[in-house]
Length: 180
Image (cartoon, rainbow, N blue to C red):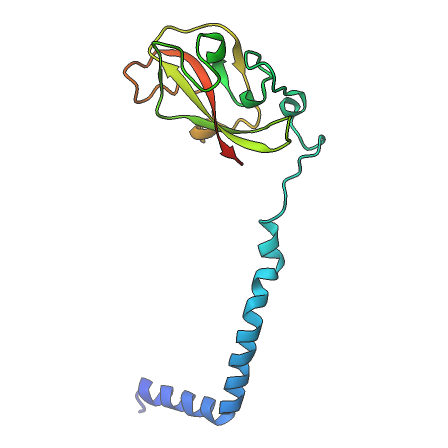
């Protein structure tokens, strides 16, 4: 009875491979691989990530089509596409600053809003101001591209006063982070 010998099997396979190929053939295949390698980044997979987003009026959401950039005390101000709550700009603060006596939460939810002046998309961090009683002025509920609650960083239905001295909600800001 014959026993299985992996060394003999490996030797047999390598001898058969060596007998059917030449050094010149191996070098030709290696050269072809080196010449073809720079072509791979040109393939459609690479170009898909470089495609420009569609900013045409038809592709914009209802909020983006009606947004304005002049009055930050109105709910249709361009940065408020995903805000929920009272606007700090109506409560003694600013679009990006809490009113005196309130503190910014260190956590936020985010949204991508289109500035009507330049047509570019910007990442906005919405941060709640906490530590004072509810302002109850300029109440807005921007639900542009809002996601379900199982994606909390993109959902505005949470009181984001985590990490502050008080969980009492006062108002919300819209801090410009950068271009999207």
